[in-house]
Figure 1 (cartoon, rainbow, N blue to C red):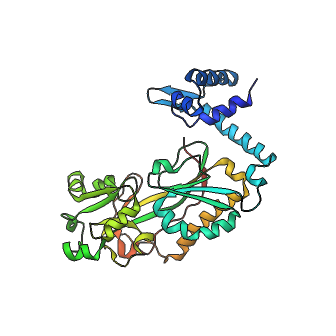
Figure 2 (cartoon, rainbow, N blue to C red):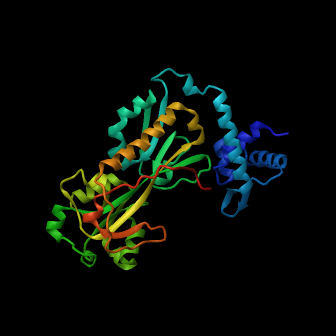
Figure 3 (tube, helix red, strand yellow):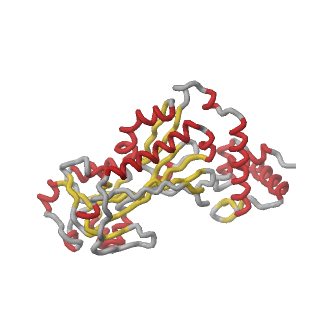
Length: 335
C-alpha cells in the first residue's frame, strides 16, 4: 500500500544530493531517511535515486515519480482552498528573488503595477550569487543561470546583450580602442557567472592575454557599473545599464556577449491566481521593454561563437539597436 506521507517525504528530499544533507534539513537521522526511501522503492517497485561517489541523483523512474506526485499535489490544491486564497486583499505576500541588476533597474520601478496585479504585498529580494537565486523557498525567481530543480517550471524571459563600455575619463586617459588589436594594453573589469566573465575573455583574446587584461573581478553588476563609470577600465554592460549614464560610452568594436535570463517558479504557483498574475506581469515587463527598443537586427560583419552561440562579434553601432530577444515559452526544468 502506498502511503501519501512517504510520497510527500520523497518530494521534499528529491532536490537534495545526499541523504546526510536531507537528514539535516528534515531534522531526522540518516538511517530514518534511508529506511523510508527503501520502503517507498519497494512499494513502487522502482529505484528512485542513483547513488554514486558524487552523491545522489534522481533516476529516470524517480523523475517520473516526482512529476506524478507534483501533479497529484497540484490537483489536490485545486480542490482545497490554499492559504493565500483565503486571505483578504492586502494580506497575501508574494516572494520574488532576482539578480540585482535586473531587480534594481528593470523591476523595482514597476513594483506599483505588480502590487496592483496581485492585490497584495511583495517581498523583493536581490542576490548577486546566481546559484542562490533559484530557490524553491521563493514564489518566483529570475536569474542568469538555468535552474535544474525538478520541482520548478522554467521560463526563458530574454537573451540579454552586453556591450563593451568605458567612461569618457578612461578613454581620455588611455585612448579609444578602435579594433580588437587595440585592446591589448587596456584593462578590463569582468563579472563572474554571466556577461563578460573570465571564460568569455579567454575565448575572445586567448588565455595569456586575458590574464593580463583582467584587472578586477566582481559578482555584482552594481559594482561593475560603478567601476566602469569611475574610469577604472572597460566592462561589458547590458543596454539597460549603460543607456542610463551619459558618462559611459559604448565602444564600436566587433565584440558582443549574450546571456540568457531565466524565470522559475514552483508548479503549485499555477494554482494561485495572484502568482499567475505575477508571472504574467513579469513576462509583460520584458515584452514591453523589447517593444520600446528600436527595431532592426544587427548586421554582423564578423562572428565568433562558442558551442552555445554565446559570444558574437558584430559592429555595436548596429547591434546597440536591439537589446532583448524575448522567449517566454514555459518548459519543465532539466534534471
